[in-house]
Image 1 (tube, rainbow, N blue to C red):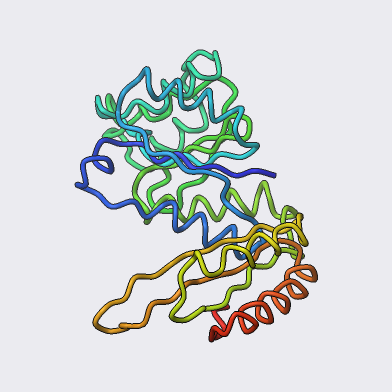
Image 2 (image 1 turned 135 degrees about the horizontal axis):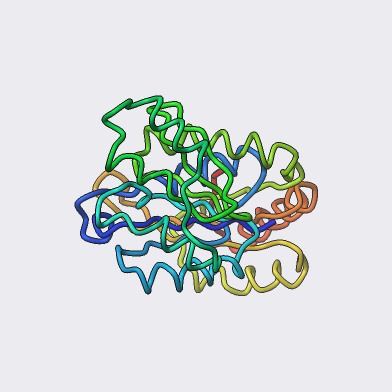
Length: 249
């Protein structure tokens, strides 16, 4: 199962706000042995939003969307989702009841607009203020506020994907010291050919005042037993090159 993330809002692209949603999704998926396939950041542009939401339907089975579901003029996500799924935007009676129950007469005339959702949408409970998010197909729409959204994300994962996971998945790495990637390239090619089901990663770290030695995080990810075997070959190969390493797991 492929998972994607869309973070919506000009404020993220301009730097007024720093994204905290992608790390939250990565952390939660990782705890289940799952990985994030892709992430996008999209500004408050209706045509661009609709295009990206339509593309996302094809790019992943599950997409977590954050931001833009409020009632202000720059909150375009609810309408964009309706357009992307070719559905009308309609008043959701349960969402309306939750909003009115939370805010009373102050729900009108503006806050209640957040109950206008794509027809047939399911609700995502919001324990912070009872203004729900919504789901359409495998796409789940939550607010941009991390305090609200991440509790809602936990609910989505528990409610819809409790039995989805990959306990067999593992990632392992070594720190290879005082080396360049060119020195390790033949070893990398040999390992990827020997273990075609695994994915290799190589992440150089430039020297700093705190750590003046050059190092490379070199590792493998995939099925746990295969990774464990391959990591032994990786360590032996690094040593055969006369290089030192430490455990980077």
